[in-house]
Length: 525
Image 1 (tube, rainbow, N blue to C red):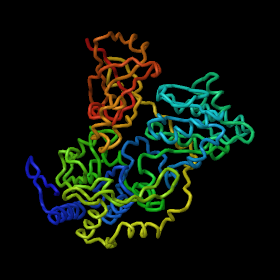
Image 2 (image 1 turned 120 degrees about the horizontal axis):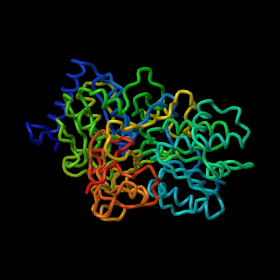
Image 3 (image 1 turned 45 degrees about the vertical axis):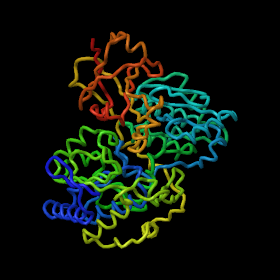
Image 4 (image 1 turned 30 degrees about the vertical axis):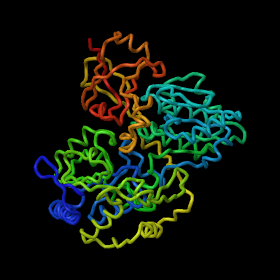
């Protein structure tokens, strides 16, 4: 049953009462302040139908503050974005490539099927190069790996691009900004070897940006550099989306684009700005505050200050304490739903079982909420009706274009600092979401949480770094960011480069650190 907050407790109420209350509160906020004071944060695991109807409700209320990119930190290149992220080479053709450069991805855990294709590529003599903030355990042989702390990744990538441009006779087309980045630091033969991997007569090569790259503080620069090489040097591009993120883009569940990738003349606020602006009302759709957003502390503060918060959730334990009304969502196994994979192929799944208890498919809740709000165009009878409406503005069968328009002149390199944190050693933070922490469902899967891959609540640093800090067996480390402080156990790990520590996100235990790319580490006796 839906829940409503009564004082400090929740009480079950009827569906009609809950829908009437939410429609009344949202309508009142629109009338008192404006629709622009309403924002929706949507889980990237949502279905195509849910994405579409939720953005439709928000925009009918006068707000384009809707976003599914919850872990993204850098939005500077939004206006240069394609219809959606994705890959330009079918996964089935990966093993036929001559070379691949992986940038910012633990690909074996992020997309195991692609990792297996890359393994086949390596076995057949193809070259695989890697640019990462730490050395991950791959199931394929790499021809070259460059491991640098996160703040250096964009500069190294720019250096690679410069060498690729020179090798392909495109040096005269290099933007001044890219050349400037590339010359900020001299790199050795490893960078030359990666450039060689991406060049050659009639070579069919690919640059793949994973989730570490897409959620990097310099993600705009990484995407722009990759797109420039794709545009000018004949290289294919792959920008790996988060979960069903391609569907989120296509459905218009981003502030600057309407359904079908059409430009929005009145763009709203992205997920970060929604929190920074402290809106009057928030709609949380499938979102677990302490795990799914880049900066849980900031989100928690914004919810505390909001006038009204409505939560759509499959799990009672995932409901934020600030929620005024809670709608019980049916799980993904209990609904008919559309998904768009990273190749741009739309796929439909049928419900395996009936929804549990009084939970309902999300699209049905949203459709009826649209009726309670007295909005036009919410007369869908089946989920197929929603797809039919979307196809009026976008052909789901057409190939996707994933390249950003190269505009490096508009992008500056981010240099993160923690000047106000003086005591301790300042280090880059390698931020990654462990494979079994990516969404509320896997976080509650007992079997998965019993595996080695789930045992990730620790700080990883190389032995030399720990020795320099004075760390001794039995000591503890306090990790500070501008958002907060946490005590973590330590695991020496020489896969981590000097000047950096690995502290995962997506975990309740590390949520207090927010998404800050720099931390200060202190040894505690």
